[in-house]
Image 1 (cartoon, one colour):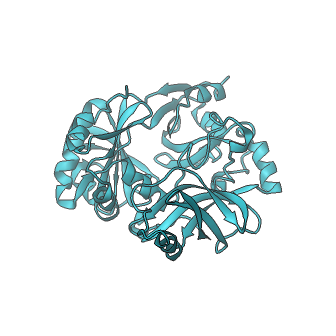
Image 2 (cartoon, helix red, strand yellow):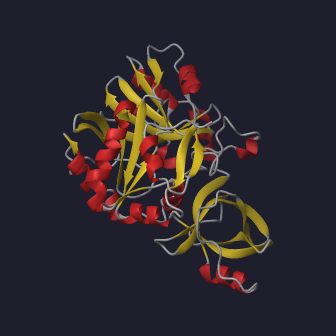
Image 3 (cartoon, helix red, strand yellow):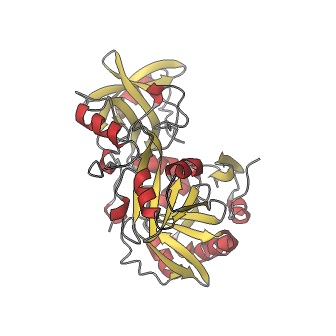
Length: 396
């Protein structure tokens, strides 16, 4: 049975829908209300409060902490400043992605890594022969994501000791909410202005209450996984085991993905002399990748026409789909769309997809399979650069 997070006494009060999902062994609200719409629009227009405690969290400290993190990740950990956060994948020896997450640096010899799946054994294996301590602190901390244009205004009233005008995108700071010590990172999974708050579990309920109290006038709203899923697709953000398969879970080689194939080539630093997977990634960089990650803008007039043939309105709005469907160039399948949603703010039907490299580039016309009344149809889909939604206030 899934466990309650440290915020469960509060989230349960707001979850009138009684819809929950098992997220890494914890109970996570799917929708607080009977639909996700209000929660989604809170993220985009005000502030959504999301319980992200189920993320795995690891503390890495000691004289070789920086060397270990640098060995694991594809980015340069030695160039990560104190107070900086790096988003990064990490790979196996074949250059295939094990997981992706964030690296937070607190001091010269102390880092925290968050991930979607358990990684303790992997980090311990990578640390063989190093003077370093690795602790799984996943159960010790509660984590909240406060996401949306009003999130900064709310935190100014709740958290003291941090100048939020100076806290840059992908940096962190330590402060206090009343007497509660916490870490605030300017990160998130929605593609909007947002922050993540990391707090000892004994203080979780009090922190939730303070945020809801001060955030009420700004429209703060508890938001569930359905609203988060639509937001992260609009932001072009990967979901492990949906948009790519971890090399720990893949049953066949065809399911494996490299950072280059997953759209994370920008996060691979081949100037580093050594890191796990470097040799394989250098070969792939020189030869070119088989697959590429992209966005698809699916033609709304064609969707309307397909449903119109059976005398129905388009039935594609609502929750995001994680069921992969084929993508075609002419009659030939060239890939698959893995995360699909109607974007309420863009008024478009969009998808994240993995397609063949080569002639397929932004502007290319493909087609995506759509099932209409149990019949497999196709609608035109234009390849576009990601993200779909990238508001200026996210980084300002």
